[in-house]
Image (tube, rainbow, N blue to C red):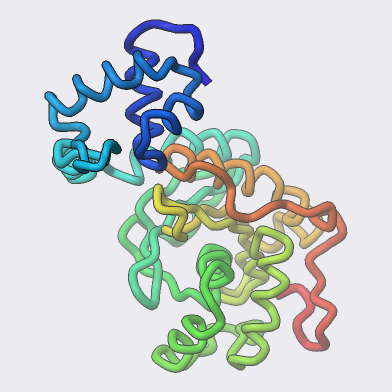
Length: 272
């Protein structure tokens, strides 16, 4: 509500409200700006092409909004928007952090911040990663419908990377339900022997899953309990990245069970 504020504040509030409301009365109620002021602002927005009358006494977003949005998105770099949160997560945990974006049946690393450990992760920007074997990948899959996950699994065949890899479609779906409930995913040496990761999904301005971020470490440097303890920081960082990408609110709510451990109650799925 913008009952008080500068004319710029009121104009921006009306422009934002125009995305969901079309009548002057509704826009005034949503913003707290008087109907006379809303009407005056809308007339200016019409002049500038940011609004247009529908001929029935209401208003719609104008074509200039799409033009401006197109220009902005053309220059929009998700990795640059995520870099601050990724660096902060790296500093907070001391471990290597990654940001990857989904590309059809896989994901691609677009940013990496090396941790303070006396070793480096074998990952690199531009490298692709499978979805069913990695923390980022499973965090992404958990945000998709079961039918889409099934389609991906049938296209890829769920190849086995290590003895811990989930290669059964049924087991994968059961596991993803657990990931969905927790709000984070763990790769317990499922993609590469000796490497553990914890990841959380990242969403774009439409609310759709775009990719994910993760913390990675050698298994000998972090047991499962320690990895789980860092999950809250990873989820918080993922939400900051999502907000930087235009997501309005977190899609996944972190439940109290976050601290209870990642062991899956399904036989054969523990620590996956």
